[in-house]
Structures are given as C-alpha cells and as structure tokens.
Length: 90
Image (tube, rainbow, N blue to C red; front, side, top):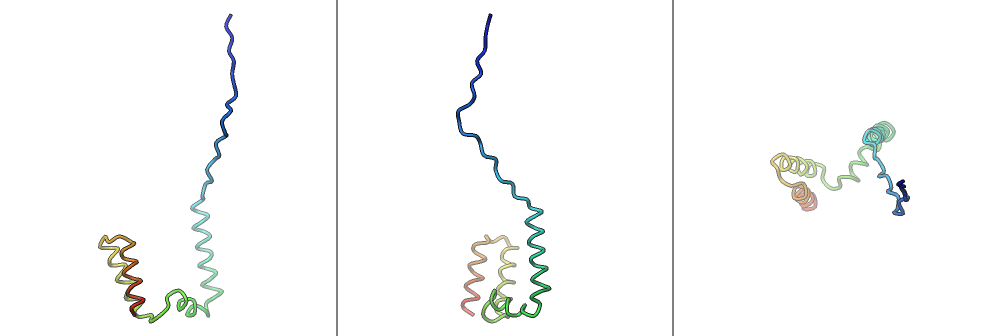
C-alpha cells in the first residue's frame, strides 16, 4: 500500500502587481484639464507665462520646430534639447 505526503511551500508568497487603470488615469487628466480651463479661465495667461517663460513668439516657433523634428524621426531627447536651447537663447 502506497502513501503520499504533501508539503506546503515555505517560500514567500508572490505579491500581485498593482494594476494601473489607464481609463481612470485618462479620466482624471481630462477632468483636471476641464477644471483648470473653467475655474482658472482668467488666469490662463499667467499660467502660460509660468509654463512657457520668455517671449511667446519664440517659444511657439521653437515648439513648432521641435514638432517638425519629431515628425522627421529625430529622437525625443534631441528635439527637446534643441527646443530648450532655442527658448533659453531667446
């Protein structure tokens, strides 16, 4: 007559990875943008001045240049570096 012994595993229990819910993250971002757009409508110019300091025309042209470089296939890091240099140089 045979018998069988089953041992419980002694190793650490595997932790389940936390799942990020992309729908929840995108919804939160859209809600934030909507709130900022409606609540801070009067301060929009001030926010843009804080985010993009310096001459707005130079910043816009530098941003368009960066987008053109990205469309041409340039790496993001290089395009961002050129954008920052153009904005700082004025």
